[in-house]
Amino acid sequence: MRSAVLLFTGWVLLAALPAHAELRGVLLYERGDYARARKTLEEDLRSSKLSKEDRVKARLYLAAALHASGAEEAARIQLEELALTAPALQVDPILFPPDFVALADKARKSVDAQRQETERKRQDEERQRLEAERQRLEAERLAREQAENSSKPPPEDVPSVSAESKQVQLRPEVFGFVDPLGKGWGLGGDVTLGLGSVDVNARVLLGENPGFGAEVGLLLGSGSVQPRLALRGTAVPGSKAYGGGAVAGLRLAPANRLILLVDVGAEYLSVKDTTEYRSFVLTSSAGVGFDLL
Image (cartoon, rainbow, N blue to C red):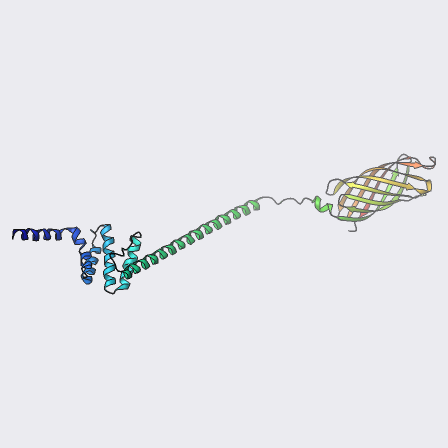
């Protein structure tokens, strides 16, 4: 009799312990009393005194009790919550039936897919935020550059040497010339073909004995005033004088298509009769031309 009283007292004390009260729903599930197990485990989950480990266990057995009672959708909700709070938990196929294990696996995969989708959306939003920030910074940079450029004075127009070097010119010219040594003077004309900084011309010197000549010249620099160096060849058939020399001068462009000419030349001629024509000729000339192209 005494032993029976001690055993009964021990069971009462064990039932009063909180740890066994928390596992009561599990014991009810294992006995097959699913309705009472559901009620007990739901009460346990509402308690704030339940430890994390026991809370996970209570939710697992609540899901199992719901599934065993035919409330599969409610069981799925509990299993998805379990997958969120304890993603490493694996349902033991020895303790639970296969269809419940399959439902738990399906719930875990659904939660994983939702987690991945949430992470993908977060990454997309972060990329969009970074792109919007990049575009904002780029717009600010362009606005600063435009403000800096608007505050600078406009650049002066500088003639392009490369553009001028491609320009073709065809220019008739008339000029007057003076021979200071021989104290002679006269008029002449030529046609000049220019290609950039190089020009060639064919010229005629009017007079009692007309002269004919040609020049190959090089224009230096660019702009409205250009120095010019050239080689000249001259022939005066009537005096049987032939030769050539060097020329230095300027080409000035005071207006569109109008060209002013200033040259000084020194030539040595082979003359058959020096009494009729000198062998060394120094000339200066000035004239005007009009560009046809």
